[in-house]
Image (cartoon, rainbow over all chains, first blue to last red; front, side, top):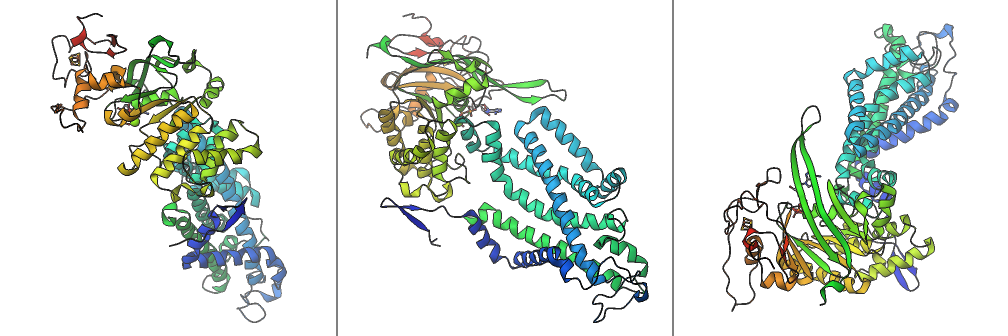
Length: 297
Length: 330
Ligand SMILES: Nc1ncnc2c1ncn2[C@@H]1O[C@H](COP(=O)(O)OP(=O)(O)OP(=O)(O)O)[C@@H](O)[C@H]1O
Ligand code: SF4
Ligand SMILES: [Mg+2]
């Protein structure tokens, strides 16, 4: 396969432009139809999260007691719930919450996990032992149980949910980053970086992390779907958002007694959760293939 | 050559590097691997000192101690009169400009996410050797020196062949204008057809930049081309050190003789007998107590098993560690 190189002329000599890493990734990703579908759904969800409130036909928190349990119809596309709120508007509004909690929780655990994992992997020895034993202890507690415990300690609220869900997956990121660093650290180019006089910090940030970033990004993308599920689970248990707010898991939890009499109160928020989780999973898998250098040579 | 006018650039004195390979549950070391065990030698300014020996005898470990990748267990590394092994990290880092390393594996030693231009520019940048606007020209110059084209500077390592990558590694080492370069088997990972090219390049660069080399290799045939003096190692010990011609024409230590006999001769008139060594190399965890080579030596005599022979000067700038040469003091 002959790659066309963009070129630039400098003083009569032709110097090739670096091949853009992003472009190469995009080429690989494009070939993966499932990942592409995932990406489109994600972009669609992001669009809804930003403009959902403008598109919503009703106020998602307004309850119209005269119209409870209306079946899906032209007026109420997804029907209304036990309090007469428009389910379509609530599902739209829930997009924002799920995506936000998902992204923030992942960012939270990603940052802390990367720092802890880098320190443990790079310096090794006792620091490594201490950090990783703490992570092991956290991992030995079932994650949803830990999140519930944290919520109980922190109290209700969206920000608390982010911290609780984020904290739960710190060990996973710390582990991935640590093991990636351990394997990358053995490479001669890290030794070479030391020999030419790099400081430890520069070695970690400039030579090691860029080479482990792909596994982190993949895990983070998949992590968003886990976080969305965790958010829904906390909502279902009534520990997520404050009552009038629309959140998919919370909607499921409050409607569960009507599963046979008014199934539409559960189906639509349920579908929304499934769609979002599936989209991030497909995209994450595609990203893994696109970022794997072996696939690209 | 008038012997004592030579200027010593680097001297290694009683250098040791022990690794603990197993630790008990409570963190106590239970077995110790003596990778480098009491090695002393000098490297004179402007020469290429060849260091040869079988796999695992501690050659790379010595090289890595010289560039601060490993801390010596004990001993001195005296560079230009300063024992650099005892310096604090900040002070030690200043010497990375003087002593550089060329790695064995050109595939593993270049960061796959950096362009080769960036790889060569990095040492100049982080050591603040040139103002930013002059770095580009310097990289162009270095690329030319190692025989790479300037228009390739924005390519990534995976777009190059092994030989070309090794040239990038050489340019990176040259970028800080070092005085001493440790070449750790720089051609052994390359195709036989391009080994000679890279060796010639290293030879040319040595004159062009006034470099001194510690040249590490497996066999004596590789260093024959490039070295001025040669040291032969076995199981963490130096067995023999001598000038190149001396060691090829008058090898004294039985181990050196065995290594030399393994080189296929190009001279048909000089028929030589191939010395086949029996037995495996003992592990550096439990080396023989006396002479390290005693378990495989074909000239072994009484005492070899128990008494460690010291590296002794026997004249003509020739040092050997072997009991066979004990009783004729020079
Ligand atoms: N970081 C380390 N930890 C433990 N043992 C080590 C370490 N580095 C090297 N060794 C051991 O020290 C001994 C000498 O290794 P070294 O790499 O110096 O050998 P070498 O002469 O360069 O061999 P080769 O020709 O295979 O490169 C070997 O037995 C090796 O297993
Ligand atoms: S000291 Fe003895 S065992 Fe060692 S090389 Fe000499 S003769 Fe052989
Ligand atoms: Mg080696």
